[in-house]
Image (cartoon, rainbow, N blue to C red; front, side, top):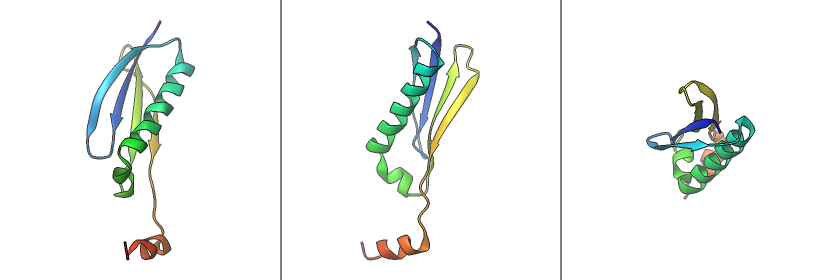
Length: 85
């Protein structure tokens, strides 16, 4: 099975990278989506602080195959609504 490397960033820190043997690129895509979802659950303040969070996936030769990004953009109305919090 091919090796896939996952580098995870929460906008401020790189979380310990992982390497996994997976059946193929589709499985690596599913794993990356799960890691991104976990990151948003573990560190929700990071995305609301204006940081983008991402998962970078590379192959066994460390060639980047794809990246997933998540970011939040607060409108002026949303910023005003949160001012009293």
